[in-house]
Image (tube, rainbow, N blue to C red; front, side, top):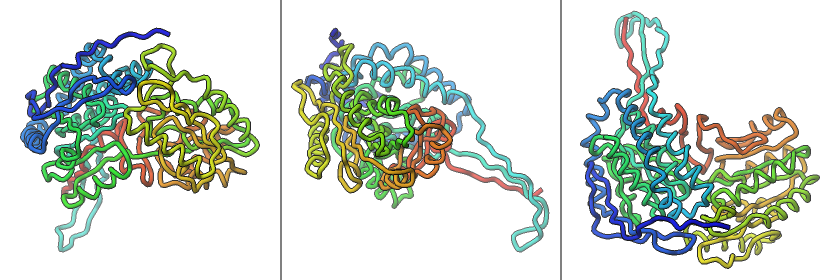
Length: 491
């Protein structure tokens, strides 16, 4: 096992980004490395006044940015991608330390190719205008007879508050601000309090790329007052939020008075259905990503396994064996698979989640103990023999926990998959894709993968039910950050 000491200055002075200026906040709060509990840095703790200043700056910058040709806006996104490609290696240690991600995850998904490419993708201008075939109309009280033509265009929404989660802070914010900026909106970024420093470093890159002052603003804070100000302000026309369903519901309610547009990617409880002819080993490999992929801190993970009874014993015994093969430890060690959770609070929440499952009658086949390590670790955990009414089946742990239950046929499997308040990402493993597709189309989920856990990066992404509102990624991302405008004329 080899580790590399991170190159981080915990005393570095960090600033907010408001109106193109580096602004010092009145106070700071500690950002902690979840693997060691050591202080990574001191983030600026923005005030309500800072939030109001950011809203004013974003609104002041909006008219000019909105009127800038899309090609020029996209060119700046391309320049930002270049700056990030040059600089991101210099702050990889920082992002790894504050997120607790393993080296593999940090290099590929925290500050890797995916992060830069989200800006690169939206650096290509796209014409979203749609013409409607002319329609003859008779004379009426509305006007004279003739032929009416129409065109449907997309207009920017205005100022967008982008409130991002702690699991993949940079990749997530890239997926928000890149399409929002391409469409002519200005943005205010409010990252999760647990790991905001990489986002502040992104702000430095935005400035270096040459974005006009006020087009991108960044606020960090430990408490709820700043995001509450953004959500309730009439100066913010849209909130793009990724996080828990309860917080999403509160944002939705708070913005109702001003008809604030929302795009929400919320909680998930990903169902994986295995039919009686599924490839168990392939499914186990996919399910094990719950444990090894950022310690289960991903809302699309297949955490709820619904396996045909004829394969159930084989599945759970194989999962139990695999769980013991996954090294839990220092995320900077090259052989570590499972790193820490992001905070002590999240660790305690997952432990209570597991204990609740055991108390309800689930069989604990793996995990359940706290690893003897200094950070916020939970061992890969498997709860078997679960039933659909258990809290551990119905709610999201957001940690390295898999729950499993048997089914006796496709109809029951679909019913169990749909017996959930969530519907973000589900999976079907079957002997052939045709059968898998038939099952997938019956599952109430915004995304379904067949015999794979690999998503299509340009397919629309979002959830049914309590898993969210709206879709992003690909061209759907541009549409999400725009208003539809129809223009008609009489020929």
